[in-house]
Each structure stands twice: as C-alpha cells, then as structure tokens.
Amino acid sequence: MIDPRYGVLQALFADRVFRIPHYQRFYSWHSRQREDLFGDLRTLATRGENQHHFMATIVCHRTDETTSIGANQYRLYDVVDGQQRLTTLIILLKCIELAMPQDSEDRTDLAKILVKRDGHLILLQTNNINEHIFNRFIREGVIPHKAELQFQSDVHLVNAINECKRFVREWQKTNNISALMSLLLHRLGFVVYDTEDSRVVYTVFEVLNSRGLAVDWLDTTKSVLMGRSYELCTSPAVVEAEIQGLQGIWSQIYRGIAKDSVPGDEILRVTARLYYGPGAGKPRSAEDSLELLRRECDAYGKPRAVSERLLDVARKLVQLHGRLDLRPVTEILHARLLAVSIMSANGINDNERTKLLEQWARVTFRIFGLYSKDSRTQVGNYVRMAAKIVTEDMEMRTYNQIMNGLQSLGSDFPIDKALTEGLIQKDCYEKSPEMCRYVLWLYEEHLAESLGSAATVDEYVRNEIWGRRASDSIEHIFPQNPGPASAWKQQISRGDSPDEPLSRHVGRIGNLILLPTVINQEAKTRPFKEKKELYAKHNLRMIQEVCNSDVWTLEQIEVRERKIVEWARTQWCDI
Image 1: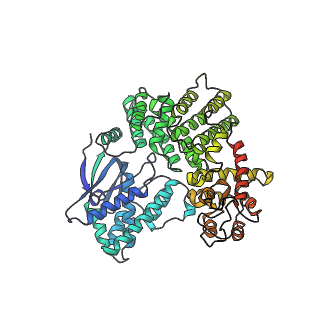
Image 2: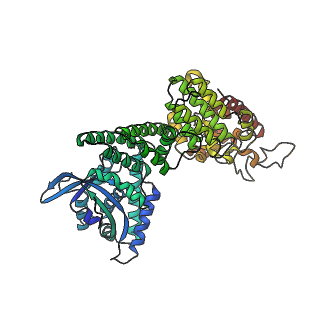
Image 3: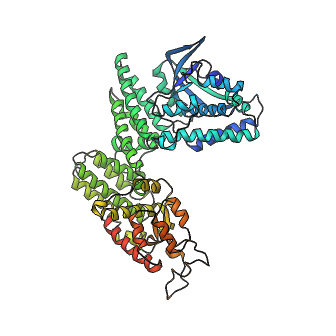
C-alpha cells in the first residue's frame, strides 16, 4: 500500500535527493507545458500569501540508499512519475539563484538546496544521456552551445533553461526575485506517493489514469507490463531478473525516442495494431491498444516479448520521423504503419526492402501529396496490407506480392492524373510549401546524380533547408509582390493577355527554387540580374539551371515547369 500525502517543495527537498532511473523517459516538455507552469505562477502571485496552488502528483520509489553529508542524511528516491515537472522546477530554481546578487543569503540558501554541501550531490540526478548538460547547469550555471546538442531531448532541456531564464528576467521587471523563490518553495503543493515496495509502484499509473490525471501512454504501458511481470512471476529471484531485463529494454526505448520526438501513444498504437490486433480499420485508440497488450501478457515472459516488440517499432518510427526529407509521405499515421511493416518484413533481402519502401513513398506521395487527399483516404487498405505483411499472410510474403500490393494501393491514383492535379499549371506554393520543398529537393538530388561522380549534395545546405519551415527555404524567382514600379513589371504577362493575374504563376513549381533563408531574404524583389548574383553564392544544381537564363518571364517558368514535370513523371510512377 502507499499513503499519499500533501506537501510543498521545501518539505519535499528537506531530507531527500531524487534520481530519474535509466529506464524512464528523458526530458520531453515543450514550450506549451512550461508556459502553462509560468502562467500558474503568475496567477498564484496575485493571490494571498497563505494560498497554495496544487501542481501535480509525484510518485517515488523510496530506495535503501542514503548519503550522509555532515549532520544531514539524505535518502535517495527514484522518481516514477512527475519527473518532467520536477526537472523544470529545479531548472527554474537554478535560474532564480543565478539572478540573485552574489552576496545574497537567499542565493546561498538556494544553492545549498540544489547542490548539497559537499558540492557533488545534486538534488536531482538524471542518470541518462542528458546528465552532463543538466548537471553542469545545476552545478555551474553553464548552458551548452547549439553544436553540443546531440539528441532531441538535449534541445528540450536547453529550451527549458532558456525559457526559465527569460521568465525570471520578466518577473524581475515588476516583482522581487526572492518572492518568486519563496512562492516556488512554500506555495506550490504536491500530492506525493512514496513506497518502498517496487511492486506497488507499477500500479500507481493505472490509479492515476482512473482518476483522470494525465499520464503519458507509453509510460503507462511500461508500468502495466512491469506490473504484470510481478504478477506472473512466483519466485523473487525470477521477478528481480525479469524486471531488470524489462528496465534494460525500456532504457533502450527511451534512449531511442530521445533522438526524435516520437509520440508515445503512436508507438503503442502501431505495435498493438500490427502485432496484437491486426486487420482493417484505423489504428485503435491508445486506451484500447493498451488493453490489447495487457491481455496478451497472460504468461511468464510475455511482458518482455511485448516490450521487445515496442522497442523494435519505436526504433523504426524514430527512423521515419527522423527523415525530414520524407515528411510529406510520413505525416499520415497509416502510411507510417505500413512503412514499419515493410521495414519488419521477413523473407525479403535488404535491396528488395529498399525498393519496396521506395514504391511505398511513390504511392503515398501521389495520394497525399499530389492528389492532396485527406488522412482518412485508404486507411483500411494500408492497415490491412500492413497486417498481412507482419503476420506473413500467404498473400503477402514475397517481394513480388508486396510490390504488387503497393502498386494496387495506388492504382486509383495514376501518375498522369496526379501531375495534372498537383503540379501542372498549379499554384503549388499556395497548396503546400512542404510539398514544394519535397519536390524541389528530390529534383535537386536527381540533378546531382545526373552528374555522376559529382553526385553529392552539400550537407550544410541540406541542414539549412530542412532545418527551417518550408516557406522560409523556398524562393520565388519572379517575386510574389514585385511592386508597381518594379523592374519585374509586366515581365510575366502573355502578349495576348497582358492583364492575366500574377498570382496564377508565381507559385508554380517552375518559378520556385530552394535557398538558405539568409539568401532568400536578400533576394526578395531585386531585378533578375541581381538575384542571379545572389543565387551564385549557392551551389545547388537547380540554381545553375536558372542562372543560365538572361531574363525570367512566363516563358522561362513554363519551360522549367515542363522539365520538372517530365522528371516527376518518372520519379513518382510505379517502379
């Protein structure tokens, strides 16, 4: 049993230090969650000093480990739930400390809470890939440079530090900084669940869920599977070994999704749909998916097998989410589900798998990119095919069977009609800047490959283009708004219809190129000759094609569009 109790941060920090176990999720809060926290603090500051604000629950496993520093003894608590909020509050307290005068007693007192008197023991120990960044900031106040960030969770952590520092600066404009410290330590309330029984810890998430409290679905799944392991193992020694094995698997899951922010509920839903409830129809809800996995765990070893499935799916989804240049074909959930099934298929070799994924990308882009179909299109067919692949159905075992299935998926969306719908004489930019960037990037890769030994694309340029919003990386050669006195005036009109609207042509694929944002901002409405001088600083092959022209009129736009369309016909037809 665990007995919840209410307390404020000052009491919570008095005689304990916290550790985030290696099998827990890394820091993943976004600006939205932090802004909610800051909003709560601003509201609390307007209320009476005797009023508290309930923040959240914190669930801890009370370990046997203690550390004595002078006359003080600190017990180590593993944080099972609440680490995101706790991490953010500790970062905020460090930002408050740094904002206080050097000789301030409050600063000294706060520093002793965050780092104990020996200068080594930190209030919160992360024990994961963020450890160096977090520890260095809490001990020394040092924020890493952008080049030092290796994982998405590193970015989340540094964003938290910067946003907390900004909040403290804004607070100081109108309020006393010591008042903010006091508010955090004495007026934020938490319901704390402590237990020495690790078996009980893994049932807490379900209790919290039943009470309507927000718990990440992947974290909940982990706790359910560990809880089932306890229930299914009779020997204490077997239980300990099984739980350690599960912790190792879940450590790998969280380490994998630290690279890219793959939603936990997606990993759960894709795994459940592919392996524990295959068939047609869209992926089940997270709640129903978890229930499928729970029912699957009816014997010793099953929770470990399910966790290994989750790890495998997580790794494949990380690969898909990490391919920014595939975003237009990976943004549909049932498309990702089918891709995961192809990545998992048995009975095909690596070359065949590569070709199948290429065909999957071609069909998916025709449907959801060029045709612009909504996310409900072909759900049943995608899911049904994915299920047949992973269950090794007689109809979907071989390379030829899977390839035929993919071609059948796209049979109602032929390439010629797709080009008419999506590219030919269309304002592609207005339709989707993301789609334009995808088309132009693959066209650039095609131009590079056509040069044989020079078939390389500069990695820095790739990162510049794909690291920003699509609209920021696309340049309109003929400007969107040239102005009435511009050198571009009447350059785009046909001779037989001088009043033809400009908007019909500036967003066409023939008038668009990729540029790093800095050059894009410089180009704007400059005359074509000056634009070419700026473009020359850029080494993409499509730029060289454009710069070969002396003028840029509707004729050049249409010639270039026809060239791109003919390439696209080959790029997105069936293999």
